[in-house]
Structure formats: structure tokens, C-alpha cells
Amino acid sequence: MVAKKISTSDKQAICKKLITLLKKRYSATLPKYDRPVLETMLHAICLENTTNSQADEMFDSLLEGFHDLNEIRVSTISELEAVFSSDIDAEWKAYRIRSVLQYVFDKEFCFDLELLRKKTLEQAQKQLTRMKALTPFVLNHTLQVVLGSHSVPADEKILNATKWLGLLSVEESIETASDSLKSSVRKTDAPLFSHLLRCLATDEELAADFNLVKNPLPEEGVDLKQAPGRLEELFANPLSKQKKRVTRKKKKAPTKTKKTTTKVKKKVPTKAKKKATKKVTKKTAKKKVPAKRTSSRKKVTKKKSSSAKK
Image 1 (tube, one colour):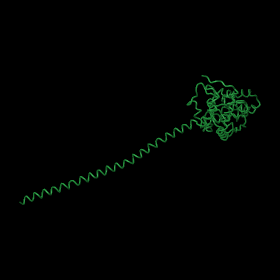
Image 2: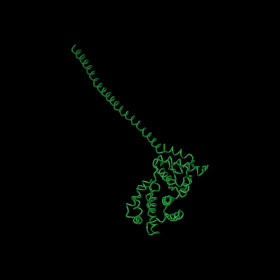
Image 3: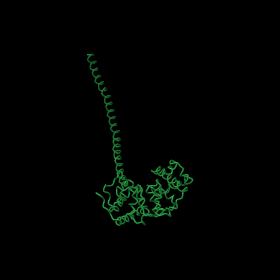
Image 4: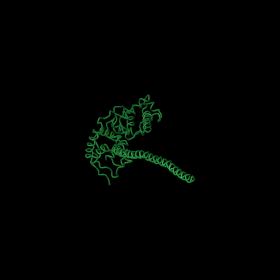
């Protein structure tokens, strides 16, 4: 079965409902992206597959840990990797940061890309696509922030979350995800929708639900019309809470066995005491028996002596 196609107007209406639900759980305040063009690109590399706050920390430590952008450019991957030590993709991000700076310096002989703001969207896109180190997310995020393009930048985590919602098909790739998502919202709502999708996709409580390797989606895809209801159920009962309930039940079982073992231990000394008392009584009984036998022998000897006298 193939998922039913939905019109653009219906898709946008559903996304409005999703935005309302997401705003209740996450902050609707957009992050401030007011950096120069090149620094916007570097921050986008830090931002990929992580939260805005974590990206800000990584970007700040990058600038504070080195003298300037040129020192970052000539540093080794291992030296830059230390900045992203808290990130799973530390080496991957360090490589891309250095590659972008090397490319820009070789082309411009400086670290200034502000002329990109004066170009058309098509011209700017062509210029950025020449940088092989840029991922589709970094490219689309830069175009959205710098030129206000109508796009919804998607990284791997956003790709999984939007597939779970039914906004994208199961077969959708990261290369085409941003273009496919932009029809879901109007241009004016795209920045807010992108921000809320990031909050959803990087929510640690929902990480297990969006792990499509362990929890694959049906081959026919997901019905987008059911997305608002499914999202409400997800917030109320994510897999992480379900696992915690199971582990709590498992933890209660050993406490019962401990009680039984303590009862057995208490009974053991009482039995031992009983056995000890029985042994004592037997020993005392054995000691008393010879006393009776000696008394009987004395009587016999007395009889013998009386008969001898006669």
C-alpha cells in the first residue's frame, strides 16, 4: 500500500495544529541568528543534530579556544575535536569546520563572505554548493538565516521526526528532505516551524520513539492526518516512560525473595537449638543408666555374703 496523497492546503492546516501543540511543550521564542555569514555557517555545523543551547556552547568554546579563525584553519582535527568532545559527531564536525575555513581562505584570501547577502537566492545557492564540506542542512540553514529563503532545514534527527509525523515518506533522503518540507508551511511560518521541529527531534525523552532503526515505521508510511493525535499520545506516554515502568516492576521482584530468605535464616537457629537440647538430654540419660546398674550389683553381692555366713 502507498500512503494517500494530501493537498498542500490540508498539509499546511495540519502543520498549524502541530505548531500549536509544539508551542505548548517548547518555547516559541526563536533563537537569535545575527552572526556574520561565515560564522553563521560555522554555527550551523555545530547546530546539526543537536540543540540550540549545545550548539551555542560549542561555537563559543571554538572561538574562545583559539586566537582567530586562521588558527582554527591551520589546527589539526584532533585539536578541534576537543571543542566538540560532548558531541557524538565531534570528529565529523571538526573536519567540516576546518574544511570550510580552508576553502573560504583559498578562494577569498580572507574570512569574509558578506557579499553573499547581496546575491540572489540562486546565485548564493550555487556558491555554497561548491563547498563540498557543507551538508544539505548547513546549506539550507545558511540560506534561510542570511537570505530568508523559504526552506525547512533538515538534519538526520529532524528527518526521522518528520517521517514519524508523516510529513515525509519513509523513503525520503536527507538531500531532498528540506525541499519536501517547505510545502508544509508558509514562508512566514518556516523559521518557527524549523525551530520547533528541532526542539522535537532533539528531545531526549522522545529519542527512543524517533529511533527508526529500533522502531521502524510501516512500509506504507504514516497518515499525516493522524499526526496531531499521535503527537499528543507521544507527549503523554513516550517509550522512555514505558521502559521506566517495566524496570520498576522488575526491581520489586527481588525484594520478595529477600524477605523469604530472611525468614529461612531466622528459622535455622531455632532448629539447631532444638537439636542441641536433644543431644544434651541423651547424654544426661546415658549418665544416669550406669548408676542404676551399680545399685543392682550391690544387692547381689550382699546376698552372696549372707549365704556364705550360713
